Length: 177
Image (tube, rainbow, N blue to C red; front, side, top):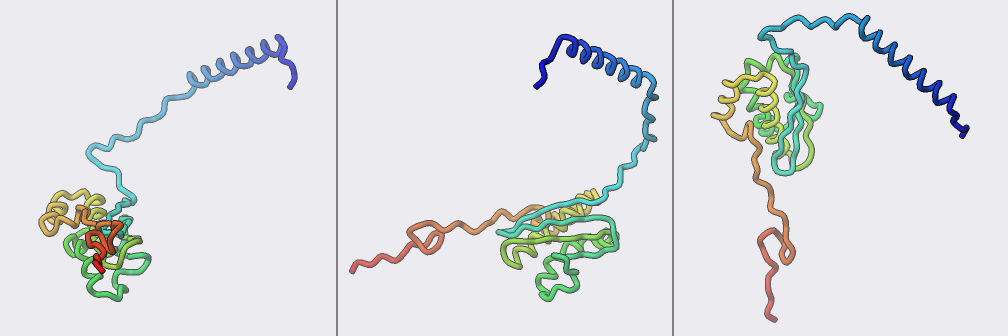
């Protein structure tokens, strides 16, 4: 490293003062930013909302945005699901919110657990996403009146297995001989 002399320190201080003066002049010369037009009572449009829900070991993440009414589960259209029972579980919130579903595109990603747990998690996440995207309190009340678990996660989980037994509560059989 080169040695710093008194002259180099003075030169650096003068350069810093000159830069400060230039910055002050630029602030004075710059016109103030124009304020955005007042949007009285109008809300900014939401582009997309991401919501998640859980059921047993399954997790579902839903992305709701404006669209053509297409619903995809793991990049597969809802109509293409082979299991009718699972299709009915997932489409339950869509039937209750028919007036909004035609204007929305819903994309669901599920993982973990089994197929029924994933379907129930997707059902809850879809309902939450529609309510949050639309902001409609009557729709929220309709969901809650129909089934509370459309908007609230079901907290029941499988109890973990303990030692000294084959399952959570059962114990190994004792032999006396």
